[in-house]
Image 1 (tube, helix red, strand yellow):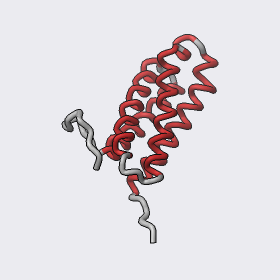
Image 2 (cartoon, rainbow, N blue to C red):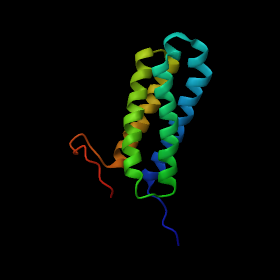
Image 3 (cartoon, helix red, strand yellow):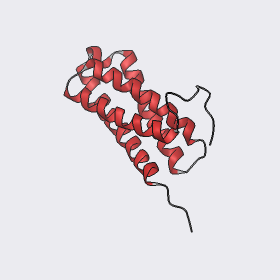
Length: 125
């Protein structure tokens, strides 16, 4: 009999997919159409990074890789950076994306098991 993933793991996977979808929608259906600061190279880059790391984190957790803690910690950092970029631009679309990124970051930070008090040296569990 297979062991089912914990509720927090399932929730984090769902939040990663939600964040990925929100960033894709915002980037491709809004930011690139708006131009200007919305399509600045650094903003597009961080949104793309967020899209990719969220998928990677969800994949690692889905297959219950013991290395998912590393990816989740990285995902949290990227999501926080994306949230900051979106919030800096502002507006309803960007604020919604920033909020989604923040929720994902918080869940991934918890799933990674690292806190601000944890030494920068990451360890597998």
